[in-house]
Image 1 (cartoon, one colour):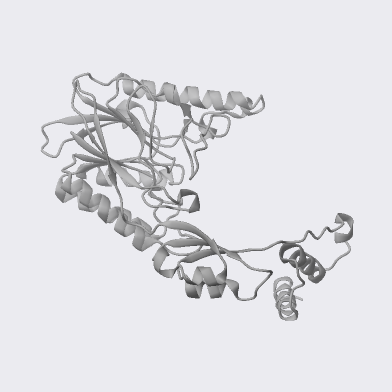
Image 2: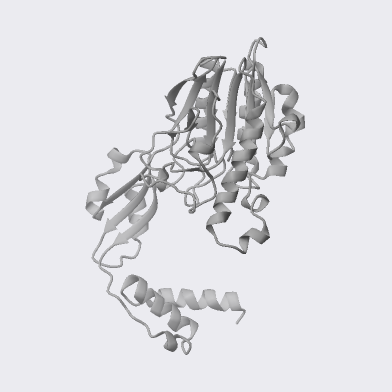
Length: 384
């Protein structure tokens, strides 16, 4: 059987207030085409489908349209909740769509109550067993009594309980079947962000790679947005996020994974790059230098660091005129420290506090026009 593993869509997430719904739509179109052209039997979605527990209607429409398109193609889908998803909201779909071979699991369950999903092939001649572990909140594992003790045991207890859950779910796997695990969980030692900094238990709740089940054809993970393979007892991968979601993900090549598995054989895993979504880039230079970058950066989302001699009114507007993709504009200049005696702050009025903040932040006094705007805003907010 062939599977497509994807995760961490975060549909509905904006970038510094800019909607990215068109990028999500293009990315989901691309995933759908890969699934159809690759003749996959099932799509595996490892959590964080939405970016918030109350996604906007247009985000829900995109996701449900994607699922609906799988049905006439006879492509099954197993979709689990991540920490960004509302378990009850997502779980409300499960009974409605199960007859369409779309299996939604929003909370950890025993194997006989939905914790292991029998996923049929396109032709109905085979079936795979998929053990599912949606995100498990820490509060459900680490009780109040334990929180009164030393901190490290909290993380150890969480890891131990998740290891137990996965072990119980995988215990019923048959050697004559295709066996997979789909989970939304952090793995200690996995890499995060643009850099190579590994994540360790004690920084966040998760499990160690060695605690994952052995003898499984494939373990598909969600939670970390950097695509990567994890050194574990079974072949284990984070597919990564669908598009570059924030500047911590710049320079990451996004992908989905095609997994071919058959009883008695090791799974074959192929990475398929995704091209939808605008890239995120960081650029730096003087205004003159930045004005010459338009053709080079194209439609990328940009974090722009502007070299200037000091505060410059209208700087962001000038940058966005030259680089419409600029979502962050950061002036770069030497800021002289402006120490303020803490005790003295108690005797300052709102306008003086604001002026002091502006001097400390920008190195100069606010203009009279800005002070007038502050007083007007303050009077409106306080009703004076």
